[in-house]
Length: 317
Image (cartoon, rainbow, N blue to C red):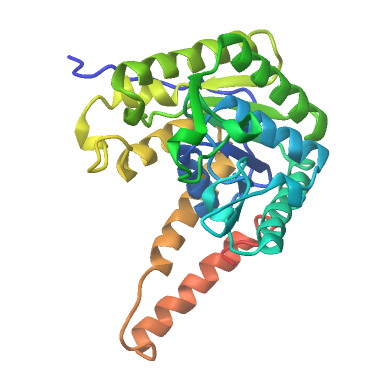
């Protein structure tokens, strides 16, 4: 008898090789998946604009990266004595305008260069809701804790979402390597502050728009990440204490499902060993001169060297 409805990811004909570059952008779930790819010592760049949630803002970021369109002073606003870009996450906010611009443009340049050599792009949408900053009539990626009275909140229309997805695909196909594979996902993190019914509406609009937009477009795929957590892992033991975000066990389960479908066999073995090395590197001792610990570190160094021989890029830096 079966006691759960398991959701599988369709096996990909194209596989992720150990030297492939993977660019990811979108919600905080995208960052969690990217962290595991990085832990497995694959080449990754994640969210050069910081965490983004809606398709409009993600497309805006991709356009700026594609064009290498740097930000200037007039693109920023000030709030609470900090210089802010409404296209970016709060981690870019600083008290000095040139520091903010240096952080923003440094990540933009890094993202642009990485995209030009990217084999895989993972895009994770979180919500269909968007905020408009009234003083500038500008749709924003993040409200930076500016009072709500300065914003209008609304749902993106189906046409706005699909247009954003189309534009994102075409920009990526133009800047990335030939035959770049673009993987779309919808974050399983529920935006409960919008309301439970509103969250369901928001997610359903994203899923519907992605399926419509990528239908018939070569090398574009949908990963059922949202469905895995909602249907396969339908139990609160797979959530963090907030009952909203998936816990590490759930994230690892989804990552393993993704890997089974998309990783080449060499990549699977490479990541598996690197996970073990990463865990071993966390081990600490009170006596670093203990012969047993010295021997442990030496053997660990040899394992890293053996892994390094398999790839050209530097690992465990």
